[in-house]
Amino acid sequence: MPDKFDLLTRARTEALFASTVETGATLNREATDRAIRDATRAHHGIRGCAAKMGGAYGESPHSTVVRLQWARRTVLANYP
Image 1 (cartoon, helix red, strand yellow):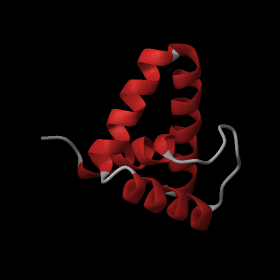
Image 2 (image 1 turned 30 degrees about the vertical axis):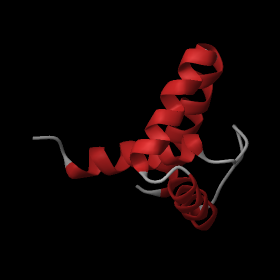
Image 3 (image 1 turned 180 degrees about the vertical axis):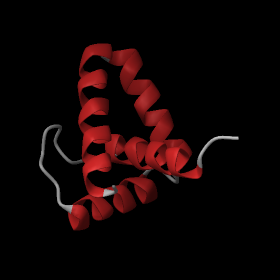
């Protein structure tokens, strides 16, 4: 069974990826929370955020990987 924190990290990363925050921005915990919340609402949940991420990969794999790495680093830094 997957670790719930792994799933939560993944969901947060997908939501931050789908947010309107520019790739590379440095976010504190409050800004990260806001970006995740806004993206989740805008895309009708985590599944919508994941779908946006998948679509982006199909359009531009390289920039998608860069954004995904940024989102994961940001989530890990703000939710230790």
